[in-house]
Image (tube, one colour):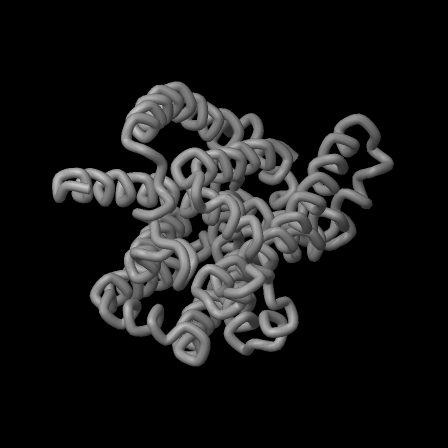
Amino acid sequence: MSQKGMDNGMSDAIWAISITWLFVFIYAILGSVDFGAGFWGLVYNPRERSRAGEIANRFLSPTWEVTNVFLVLLVVTIVAFFPRAIAPLGTGLLIPGSLVLILLTLRSAFMVFHYSALRFRSTLRIVSGVTGLLIPSLLVIALPILAGGFIDPETDRLLVGKLLSSPVTYAYLAFGLSSELFLSAAFLADYSREAEDSSAYAVFRKYALWLGPFTLATAVLTVYLMGRQAEWLRDHILEEQGWFLLSAIAFLLGYSALWWRRKHPERERGFPRVAFVCFILQFALASYAYGAAHLPYLVYPTLTVEESVTNPAMFDSLLISYAVGMAILVPGFIYFWRLFLKDKRYVGRG
């Protein structure tokens, strides 16, 4: 292959993995808020004096389908842009991926039943809360698998025993679950403020304040333990420490925003909208740094992005298709946001 052809292939690979990682990030944020809302809806049931559970379920009702749209887009993007990666990814992610699909089907089914039969309401709350913890846990397990060391190079089988006995697996799980609950609490604090519900706002602000430092601590612990299983990734992450420093600054700014005093002293402290935007920026910077550190591998050490990307002609066609699709979908998502998450007739009801 000529140097020009190699450069073009690598350029296509970088564009393809960037688009894929963008969908991973979007789904991670939407999924965290969606699944976390299901968990908070279970913890604060309707019999509680606080309306936190009602606020969480009110957000959950219109958003679960949108979250699933991005999951489908993510899977389609991986298959379309990286067809050569289907076999190794399928081998490593078969068990967690299959369990995620089963749980998503169960969760979605009860979402539908909830609207057609009120007697399923309490069951939905339980299913949504439990799957809100299990699904993110299974999704996060994909990260240590892709970092290497848990797939047998001879048989290409997932080493389940080794995966479940490794400390780094549980560090990833702790980070994933704390991130989910932290982001969902921060968002629901803002959603409660939008609904002018001071009791729910106080509940979710409290959890955001508690979970923020814990999430940061689990991130540091994960990087530390990563060196035992994936030293190459830890070394690459340390090379991207500038981005992680910016991420930490964004976190501190958002965390401080939850303490800022408001002009009206009778209102609760904090600017949750500013805080949540800063937290999204924090995760965006950290996500970019982690993705850059993971390059050039999709699955370490057997598969790189350049080796698995589709051919240039197919790549160009896919790029055009995605551009047209996003031009259609983005205005719809913006309208959805304004309709269900900003409209006072919906948000402030009750």
